[in-house]
Image 1 (cartoon, rainbow, N blue to C red):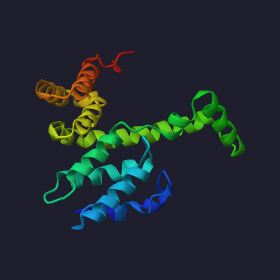
Image 2 (cartoon, rainbow, N blue to C red):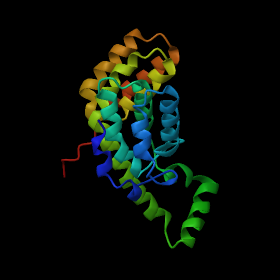
Image 3 (cartoon, one colour):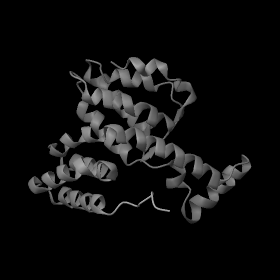
Length: 210
């Protein structure tokens, strides 16, 4: 398991704190028989490849391995892995989050300008990175559906939000969310499920027409 980790040049991809050289050991630590080691690894991954709602190039590289852990036999922390994947699924770019508003935008324009960069170029670069993350998440998204039955209503909301962001899977996620809504007992979770059902029911843009 996780044999492909060493085939990635983790030093060349970044997360919230720079080079992602720590990611392989953290992913392997999710297989540790020691619950404390596993918890520490999850906490670190929630701080670097996902950080306060933002995701990075290293996130896209890590997602296939997270799905491998989620679907393999005998992995002891699958719920934590699913939680991390659900957070990544709705992740946004750093500049998208921070370089906005009356303070954020001019501040980052000034900072980037000193480096010879423009905010527009950084947002364009970041958008490509986010698309890479979304493509990676989309590959295995249906594997999150069983967690709609988790005992924690907050976690059920997180899973519903993740499923609702990927209309390309609506043929399986819409029925799963509909079934989850029928048995949902928490008002807040039910509201989140309804919102995502509505999102998945919206017509998708037709990119084939001229």
